[in-house]
Image (cartoon, rainbow, N blue to C red; front, side):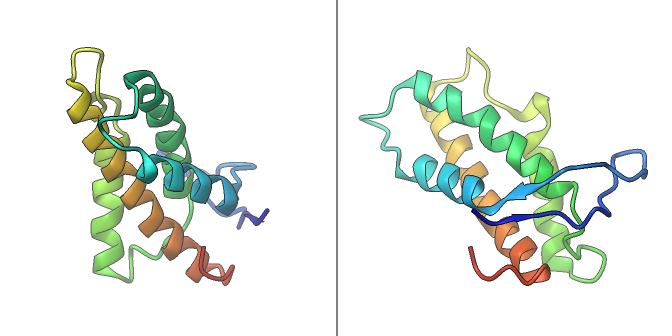
Amino acid sequence: MLMASTGKARNSAGEPEAGVEISVAEITSLTDTALGFRLGTTTREQLDCYVPRLARELRRLLSKELGADEDPDVQQLVRKAREMVDLTARPTVDTPTFGTFSYLRDLANLSRRLLWVYATKNELGAP
């Protein structure tokens, strides 16, 4: 399992975050599973289980230096990811199943893209 940590992550107050590790294998597994879900055969409970897990991993990725200062494309991905992990943007119990399904797929796709950025920047090899 590939684990990486630069030790230089900063929290929202701009102070270093201690011990936030990125598990390439965990994020890859979560995104593979989420993108493998099919609307007609996946239960709402399965979707509801994966949303917070994947959002947590995406937040961890966002705590790392991804190069957004130097790359406008990465900056755009980071901005979108921050919007998606915001609790007010997440599906609720009142969200139709299709809405939750769509949100989870978007979350998984964005997580994969940022994982690739992270792995490339830290010379971990492609996830």
